[in-house]
Length: 255
Length: 314
Image (cartoon, rainbow over all chains, first blue to last red; front, side, top):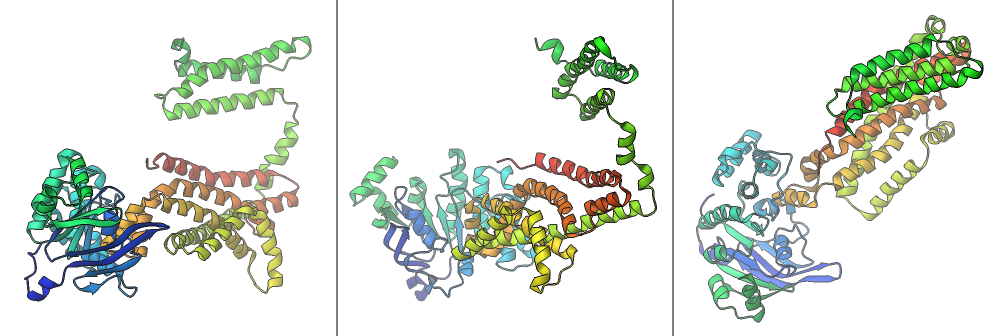
């Protein structure tokens, strides 16, 4: 992956991802109650909170896999929560990695990664396969290109999923609890790939409870509770000196 | 307890078969008071045969051809017992139902075979139409998912599943001349069967689409694929394997239902056979017709059960 874009004064001010007053209703339940967030170019932002606090729903609103009921999302200064926006091209520019990998079981690892390049990016098939292969090599799966998902371990499947996002050359990647479905011994191989991405300047929003990983990698931590942001700040500060009692309670329960 | 009886003994079974067959065919039926001994002997033949037959059938290691052969042997014994005991007019039955002379008259077999060809054509045309219709309805229902559209699709499915195809054929065929629509009987038959089968296949394909985890669609959409692309590239290829057993079962049913087209004067197997039957006052064409259906359907059912065995688990 290429390094972070040159930090021109303009790019420094316009965030890569900005959320303005996001609300989300599921039927009568109000799951997001006005969320604002800014993610700078090359920044890694962690979202934490108990289950049902709205962090995953918020993450899904950022590429409109879930439609926000109110509020706007801006990618690189462009409003994408607009009926005229081509939502498919927005999603092609923002990668997403799911908790249970969601690879396509009827395709090989290589085909999984090449699918978007062929059908969204409209690359010729052999060029797409070359790009897909290099993305898989980047996540350390050079020997597994022709395997189907059911022949791969959980950690390997999740790395294929990361390569699938990566191959699209996205502006940012959203991670929705990428390691919580993995056996403990496979967590590190996925976190290593994510750490490498972060050091290369990839903009990332990560829902995760891997404290040790977040402390090293995340620049900013946002705490969710009952559909609201209750605390945010530099990761080390929030982890070491939480201000909100709910944050303290939550972090205490994690240990 | 399970020892001696549950052992398969194919040689003994073969011996029992020939002994039983010899008794049933070679000895004349006893009359008078000793008849009960004859009945007991006949029943005994079958009890002894079954005692050897059942262990062979339930043995997992026994080869398929041996099981099939022994099942055929049982069938032959039953036929022999029927032949021995039934007070039938064999000559008359043979003349009416197995009359080679009637079938060898000029043009008769040709007409039967052209009936088979027409039946196969009705089957193939309505199958292709029904498959396209079913996939289209199921895909539209899944992607557009509009309340009004869903209502119309469900109404179509429910109505066409609730009316017997033969009734629909007759109604359509007799109403068409007054509606200003000119369709040949063949086209009418194909369209009606396709509409009925399309209703069932809509449900078959819908189940196949809904069986795919919703996260597969989310994952496909998050790469930037459109809803149609996600359906075509991710969902349908996975649905096909799930749907195949149900689909191929429907296929057999459709082939059998082509016989119902005889009521609207399509010259398929049954219609030709009935015409010949009344022409020659002889039922042999019906028997030949049944054999023609079997000739098509027997290979089909074997293929389908092979497909069913390969049904993907989970």
